[in-house]
Image (cartoon, rainbow, N blue to C red; front, side, top):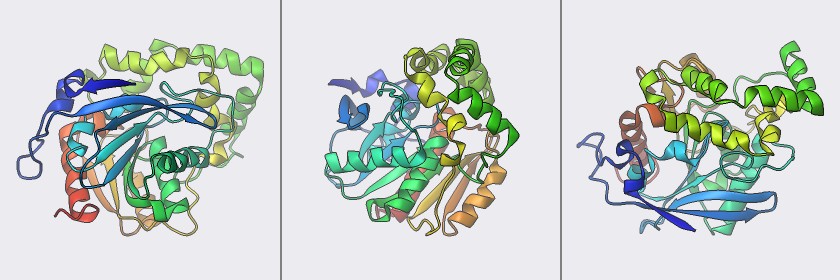
Length: 311
C-alpha cells in the first residue's frame, strides 16, 4: 500500500477550480494505491479517502491506458464522492493473464470489486474502451449504477468479425508466432507516441512522461494477450444493450477527436435517448487529460444536478 499526496500529481490535477461558479476550492486529496486480488489476478486500485456523503465513483480507463489517465480529475471528483480508479485486467500495473478479454469480463471485474468493497451503487466513468465497459456494466447491472459518464466511448456502432481486415487481424492475433512478431513491432515508444499524436489535438499535451506511462505496460510479458484482445475477439467489443441503459448519463466528447469523431454521438444518443451531452472544442480523444478544467466543470455540474442531488 502506498499513499500519493495531491502534490504528487501534475499541476493541472491540483488546481481547485475550473470555474468559480460551479466548483469549490479542492482540498488536499490523498490517493492510496493498493492491489486487489481478483480471481484472474491482481488489480491495481487508486482510491481517495472515504467521503461522508457515501457517494462513490469508479473510473475506467481506455485501451492501453491506466489509472494515471485520471490524475487531473480525481481531486475535483473527490470533493463529492469517494473515488476509485481501476487498472483493468491486462493493462497498467494489473496482472496480464492469457484469458478471454471482453467488455463483459471487465464488467465482472467492476461488479466483483464493488462486492469486495461493499459498494451497493456507484457512478461509473468510462473513457474510450472503458466507456464501452461502463455502458455494458450499466446495462447488465442497472441496480448497481447510480450514474454514467461516457467519455469518447468506443463500442458503437458494432464492428462485425466478418470484415476482411478483422479476419486478418484475428488470424495474426491467434497465431503464436505472428502474434509475437506483430506485438514486438507494435510495442515501441515510437508507436506509442504515434498513437498519442492521433489521440490528442494539442501536441504539447504529449509529454515524455505521458509517453513513458503508455510504453511501460507494453514491456510486461503478458501484455500481448490484452493488447491484441480486440483483434482476437472483435465481437466482444461493442455494446450489447437490448434492454436499454436507464441510468442518468452524460456523454462527453472531444470536438476534434480523430479516433472516434463526434458524429458517433448520434448512435449513442439513440442508444441512451435521455443522455445529456457536452462537446469540448479544440480537444481530441482524451478530454479528461487534454482539457481537464472544461471536463471537470462539465462532469461536476452533471453529477451535482442529476446524480448527487446537490443542484
